[in-house]
Length: 307
Image (cartoon, rainbow, N blue to C red; front, side, top):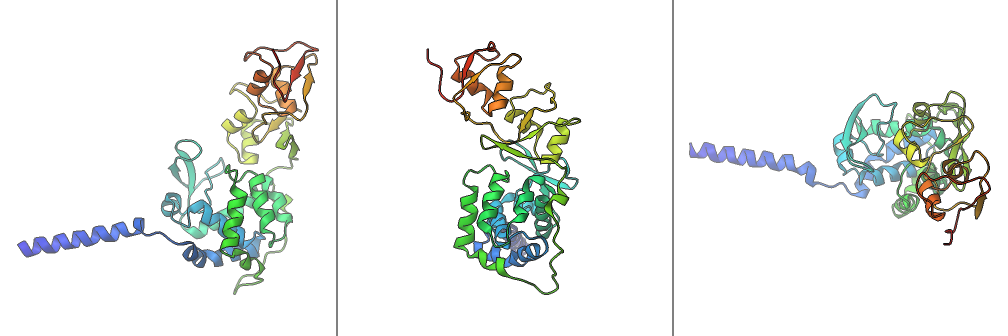
């Protein structure tokens, strides 16, 4: 009986060790590259995204395949659910608590969806005009298009590429059984025919007839709370045809020093006009929230109004 108990204990101990190994083992950078470089090259040959960029993003976003999102959801690119996702999900904290991320049957599905994600969002369309060897241009473009909120995202991608010589994969012309797809203009995969403009170094669109919060969120792959935050809107506010809607945070300062208030203008419309945060516009002019200026009044847009 005692022998059986010892054998059982040994079995259970061995089983526990085996179960613990996947959580304890960490994939190295080189192991990640060797394991997934061919998948990255295939995506490059078929869809014109540099293999170096695909690998670098996968390594950065997944912690070399070791993050919880990568281990439990096969999500190597940090792609969230968004409105158009119909697959399985994985919940974890990110920019906010309990955010929804896509969960894939395999890592290859994550690689395929990363390509589809970039090709189906109009904000990334300009990247496909770059050469597949221009990893610097792609790294800069991904940050500009808002792929990540990390201010050093570009530098981190480039560092991974250059330290691991991932650029060597960008010059590969073919792999067995893989043929490049016929070139397709990225504009053909845009969700809608919409012009994105830049003012005060902030991306914005102009509201068109029929626009709604849901429509703009789906088109630009952005959440409603972000649109409201970027534009100082409440849930009850409606879009007005012809007005600016910013797709990024407004700035702390405007391009101009002052603004002379015109009839019909208010603090919010002036904030939108100059791309300056509403609360800072109030603060610069020593005004209380909700207070409105009079026509002809001079508002400060960069410096602070003196007492």
